[in-house]
Amino acid sequence: MSKKKIIIVGGSGSIGSCIAREIKNEGFEPILIGRNITSLKSLSDELNCSYEIIDVTESKKLKEYLETNNDNVFGIAYCVGSIELKPFSLTTEQEYIESFKLNTVGAIISIQSLQNTLIKNKGSILLFSTIAVKQGFTNHSLVSTSKGAIEGLTLSLAAELSPHVRVNCIAPSLTESNMSRKLISNENIKKAIENMHPIPKLGHPDDYGKISAFLLGNNNKWITGQIIHVDGGRSTLRKKG
Image (cartoon, rainbow, N blue to C red; front, side):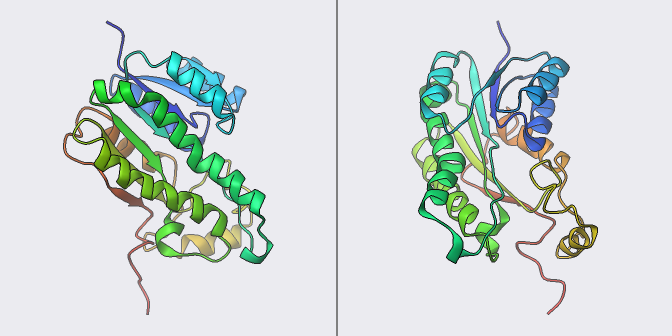
């Protein structure tokens, strides 16, 4: 019998790559979906797993691939994200539409395409939000709006798909990755952001791997409908004032 599969959408990213390695260690077969062929191929060679180059905003292509490659799928992690920061007054309707297509609609299409298989296999869904939904940061309206929808989707699906499918969400703080490289390229800015966290550092992709593998895997038997903040305490703690 072939190994149980977990599909990682955004598998070419820093967090997605760490999740793939951890679920491989847990005995699952990761299936990678992403846009960066170089990263996908490198990780695929390392883990001896398959990959597919898909832009998640191409809904038809994403749906067709998942519906025809859903055999023995026991989980999906949707790790796609964006950092688009600008004042609200400068944002456009099209930018909100694009943010929703990337961060929210892609997750919806992915889950709908695998829903019957996940129910049959009593599987698991893991989504990713952002600390900015709960905390509230200036210039974050684009990403907070679409990721806020992800948190709503998590709770709704956790109720609707119970008791068959567990649905959870991780809300990270700023993490060192290719996506955040430009934002933290200035060492003074990076240090200032680090010091905003009670544990004064930025997130690292490894901070999400083991908890993601647990939530997706067989050992998680009773956790669903949770928004889990992996953020150095920033969303809930204040060391001053």
